[in-house]
Amino acid sequence: MKKLFKNYVATFGGLSREVWWLSLITLINRAGTMVIPFLSLYLKEGLGYSYSDVGLIMVFFGLGSVAGSRLGGYLTDRIGYFKVMQWSLFLTGILFVLLQFVKTLNGFCASIFVLMLIADTFRPAMFVALSSYSKPENKTRSVTLIRLAINLGFTAGPAVGGIIITALGYEGLFWVDGITCALATILLMVVLNPKKARISDEIKVENPVSVYSDKPYWFFLISMSLFGIVFLQYFSTIPLYYSQVHELSKVEIGLLLGGNGLIIFLLEMPLVKWLEDLKKTKITLMLIGGVLVTMSFIVLNMTNWVGILLVGMFFMTIGEMIMFPFSNAYAMESAKKGNQGQYMSWYALSFSVAHVFGHFSGMHLIEKVGFDNTWYIIFVLSLLSGVFLLILKAKTKSKETAAKKVLQFDK
Image 1: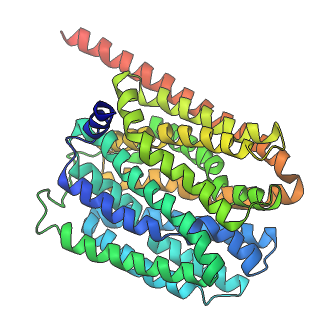
Image 2: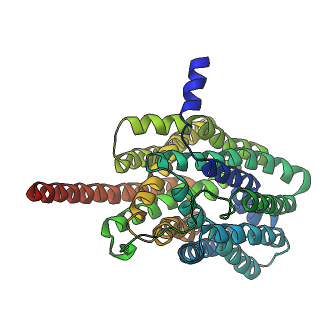
Image 3: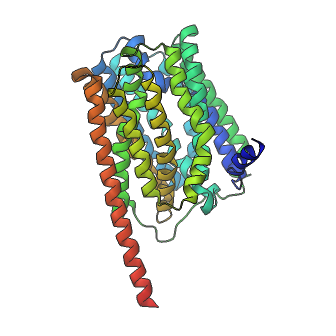
């Protein structure tokens, strides 16, 4: 047991001090974002909106995320990641508190758009900061540490969120979100101030490649958008499925979602280190992760046994642990060719696009064709995501073969 613990700790070795601080800031911020997993339930049960209304609000959620991702990348390349992260966290905290006072459909659509516009400027800036704070050989594990922080927060967040809803109502979640954003802002200003940091805030690439001319990267982005639509069902339709089909309570839903974060916290870093040692390509590993997430939906249609929810969550969790670290690392590796803010903003935007279509289409589908048929449609979308990854793999292999031929010719 002692040796096992030492090996586990060793997988975290070599990461920079700044990466650890960035992870702690992310943990504090993520632990407070309790509203997001319960947003569909809040809109449906708290405010009494129909499925179509909830889907429409989620469209504006996604549109705000799209705009925020693009704005975040633009600002990061011009004023630096620190200022973008600082103002994003601070303003997001204020907006979370104010959101509880919005009750009308039009008002909520506008408010959620502005909230996500500000909140998602953080993501490209955080990715660029992470890249600048990490040695090349540590980038995937640095991403994994950030994800551990996110999922540790996600473990506590939904579980505590379910308790807060039961005790104080949904309004309590908005206050907690606002307070934790404020705490994360203060910590950011104290420990990652660029005047004190060992790494420069300026990240420049000579003769940068435009993301618009990087065709293989676009196949990657399309695949990630499709995968995002699939994955984001766990934040919109899946909680409703738990509640309405299997009649789980808010606390039970929170614990089930929180269990996902706990498994990731315990197993993701060793899993990523083990997969890195296998010397498989990042694209191959992304394909494996996508297959496992696909299985998490298919098993739900196999039986009405409530325990199948744990099986589905297990497949999704393992798939997520493989897909996200290596897709993040692939994006950061590609970003070295151009303006990093631009590349990382498009990576973040691929999931923002998924927010636009994923929540609305999921809500619309369960209303029109039911949960079971929706999971079959999600399966087809997941297959399409895999097809684009296979195309990317073929193009990457072809490019590498051509580069080797050129190198041999030069010799």
